[in-house]
Amino acid sequence: MHVYAISDADTTLAVLDPAGDWYCNDDGMSLNPIVTIARPLSGNYNIWLGVRHSARLEQAKLYISEIDPR
Image 1 (tube, rainbow, N blue to C red):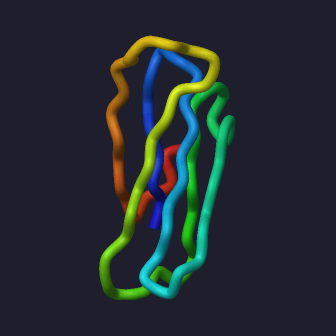
Image 2: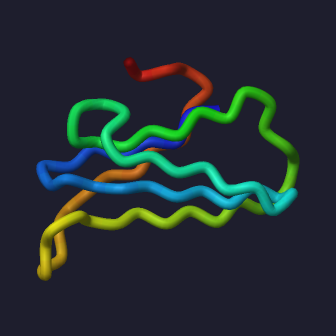
């Protein structure tokens, strides 16, 4: 499972899986983050998407896919 964001801003990503494990990334795809979970568990995931070095809100799109976008 690949969780990633596309934005013109420098974004960060944190994912908490159902087992309580954290996955974080900052610049996995240039300034865009990507988290890859090889064997995702069934259940609820908590996802946080943030912006680095900006005091204002920025536009971003969040994607979840089985296909690696790189």
